[in-house]
Amino acid sequence: MTKKTRSLILVLCVVLFFIIAPYIIIYSLGYRIDFEQKKIVITGGIYVRALPLGSDVIVDSKIKNTTSFLSPTVFVQNLLPKQHSILIKKGGYYDYKKNLEVKEKEVVKLEQVILFKEKILFDILTDKTNSPFFSLRDISQSETKKDQEQLFIIKNGNLYKNSPETSVAILKKVFSFGVSGNNIIWLGLDGFLYSSSQDGKITNKLSQTSLKIINNRAYKFTIISSNVFLKEDNNLLLFNQKTKTFETFYSPVKDLKISPDGQKILYYNDNEILYSYLNSGNPEKIFLNRFSEKIGESFWLNDNYLIFSLGEKIVISEIDNRDSINIITLLQTLSPSDKISFNQQDKKLYILTKDTILSSERLIP
Image 1 (cartoon, rainbow, N blue to C red):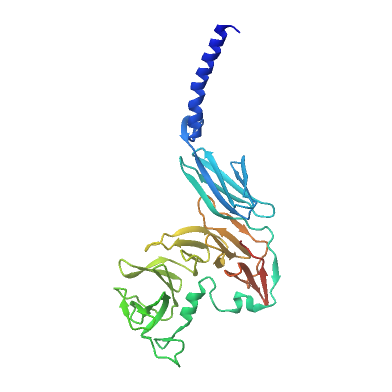
Image 2 (cartoon, rainbow, N blue to C red):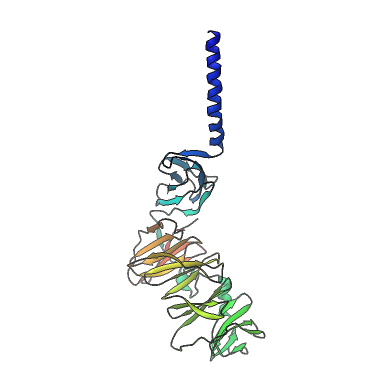
C-alpha cells in the first residue's frame, strides 16, 4: 500500500468520524429525524403497567415487550412525537387498545390497565349470607361511614342516636342528614344546611339561602372530601362553598357511587354515565358514555374500572377517556328481573336471578 493510499484512508476515516460521531451523540441524547415532518425532533416514551403478569405490550404493531412475572411494567423509549397505537393482550383475555399522543421529552403513562378473562366462571351461592343481597347496606361505600350513619335515626323531625326509645334527641327540626368525619351535616326543616358535632352541642349554619323542600320528594346526602351532594329525587345538587347555596350539579341522576379510594364519584341515569374527581370545590364533570339501552345498577370495580348492567348485558368499562374507552361485555346475560351487585371485599360479581344467587370468580387482582 502506497503512502498516498494510506493518507487517503486516514483522511476518509477522519471525515467519517466527524460525520458519524455527532450523529451518535445526538442519537444518544434522544434526537431523531422525523422524515414525515422533515425535521429533527426529540423523542418521548410510553410507560405501561398492565395486569395480569405476562401480558404482551405492542406499540405501533412492531415494538413488542412482555410484562414479566417479576414486574407488571413496560417502558418503551425513543418514540417520535406523534400518535402511537398500544395493544395489550394475553391468551384467554380480552385485548386492550388505546391510541396515545407522545410529546417531545415526555413520557405518556398508561398505568392502570387490567385485562379481563373472556370466560368468567359463575357458581350457585349456597350460603346466601356471603352475598351483598343478604344485607341492605350499600357496599360501594365504606363500612365505617355506613355504620356511623346507621347509629342515627330521624323520627318526627328529631335526630336520635341509636334509638328514639332509649335516647334523647340530639338535634331537632331535621329533614335529612349525612355523616362527615366527626360531624353531622343536616338539612333543617327550614331548608338551611347545618353542621353539628355528633353530640349535637355545637351547631353551625352553612348556607345563606333556604332550599325549598318538597315533602313528596326523596332526599339523600352524599358527603365526601368536603363536597356535599344532595340528591333530590333525580336531581343531583352540590353545595357551593363560595356562594353558600345548593346548585344543580347534574340531572337526571338515578344513583351515585363513591370510588374505593374516596377520590371520585360516579353518577348515572338510564342512558348516560359520568364521573368526577373530588379534589376541588367545583368537580369537573367527565362524560364517559351514552347508550341506547337502559343502564341498570352500576358499581366501581376498583378506582379505574366500572361494572354495570346494560339491558340484558353485563359490561365492564375503564374510565380513562383518552382516545376510545375500552368496554367489554361478559358472556353471562341477564333477564329483566335480575339484579347485580359487586362486593369490594371479595372482588366478586353477584347476580340475583329469581331465588338463585350466582357468584363469579374474582374479577380483578
